[in-house]
Image (tube, rainbow, N blue to C red):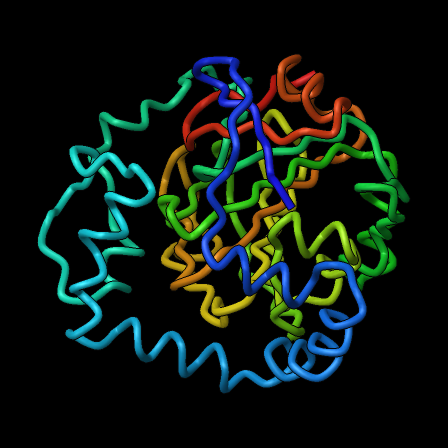
Length: 296
């Protein structure tokens, strides 16, 4: 399966190089033999935390550092963005920090920014809606009926982070974040190959939900979603203390992962290019700090 996206900087359509693509196709692709293989292996990988723990452990070993240079070359990663070039392991490289000037933040307080580097879909109004032809339930996603009712017909942005991306995530606007709420779950892949097969993955995977009280956007829900090999979602912020737009919130350890932002009805209008691309069924590749939308 070929995955395409639109590069926001150039406006051009590009083909994504998928990390572990053949393995993902084997687990989530079509066909009888693939189905039989996935029937036995997929539940083991998604449901047994040991798989992600063991894989993560290997990425923290010093011997894993030898994979860094080939990985940078294979995925065309710009090493000049790194705040530090010395990494003791592949995981150290994966959770790298960037030079602040390489991710400028839109300063207008009524502009909400992208929280991470990734590939984006945006929905200006939703409750129960369809992604890739499958129904997605807000109630199942949040596991909180009053909260789901509060965000009915609200707005949602989804960021998909690939293994080659910068994996620290940031606050999209000023506000006061509460303590995150953990929903334990599985660790299916969030790659489009997997989501095409079953979009309910987003409601089944391990995730953390943080409520942020803001001046211009009301209450914002910030949701980190784990995925295959990403059992660890690390929070680095202090709950109940005011944060500024662009401040670091946390990071994912090795693997692909996903972030969702939810806004109450009538609070935000997403940028036209992100909306248009989503309506065409294609993701937009963009970076943390770029504009996501404007307060209504």
